[in-house]
Image 1 (tube, one colour):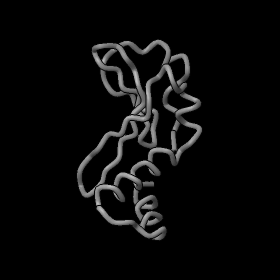
Image 2 (spheres, rainbow, N blue to C red; image 1 turned 90 degrees about the vertical axis):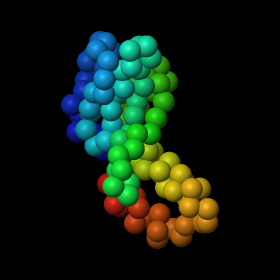
Image 3 (cartoon, rainbow, N blue to C red; image 1 turned 120 degrees about the horizontal axis):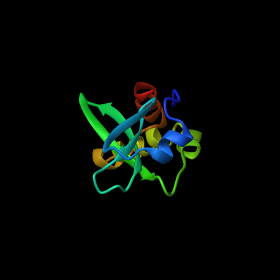
Image 4 (spheres, helix red, strand yellow; image 1 turned 180 degrees about the vertical axis):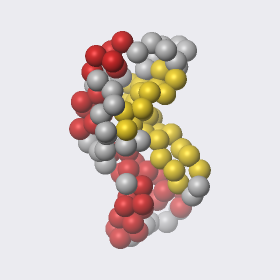
Length: 100
């Protein structure tokens, strides 16, 4: 998932507000309030979407990189829920492949 643009030290010292890319859709979000967290950014039906993956206090850079499909699996669940009907496994697989 991640290309590894961020280092653990850089993550610990980032204070400037904004989105700091690690690659593969993984971003460290630093708001003006200072509460940092992980974001998985993806595009679905032509619209960019951001999904929160948890606070930096709860998951280190290594942990955020450890499960590359976590965000994609959550997206499939959201699509299933919003669609109002169950999706077949092959449909979920096609969605995940499209998001890769």
